[in-house]
Image (cartoon, rainbow, N blue to C red; front, side, top):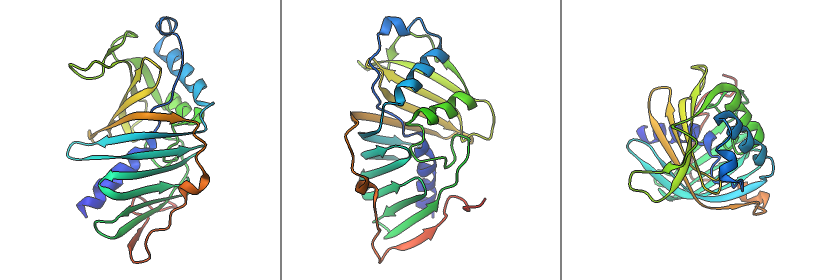
Length: 238
């Protein structure tokens, strides 16, 4: 069951799949903004994003997953994983399905609506103006150091502006988020620290915005031979 626990952590974490959205703004102008104003400007731009495709990697303390992510508003998401090979995660906003071919298992979860970050508000809920409004409401927002760009990593040539968000209430799934925004105002990375101090990092690359993804991309029926586990994260009415 350890592998299922890891998948559950991943599934909860994927509410933060909001990266890679482009904001063509003037850097000098943005440096005059407070962190909250900068965040609000980003949120306004999210209203023009209908769907996107990105290469994503998701790292925890002891694991790394990679794949191609598809998102369509308001809350549809699919990840075709290359690591673990053949694994699939799909959500239409009402039902989450994760198929694990290695064990011939499909995990299914009916999603409930809530107004906190870190639950099942929607697997890609933050890739929208409304999703970011939840962060705006439930987190304090600051620059991690300053509005000036810094290295994404030590010895990295990528320069980003980093925002630090801290929870206002322990009801949130993440006590802290660090969002790295590149020079084109794309969310390049999100690092979340969970309530129990687990760190999860999302990296987004090769993003294509408003790619007219067909709705059929989010239809998925797992193999009939797969063992199914229902409501593995929480009870639907809980």
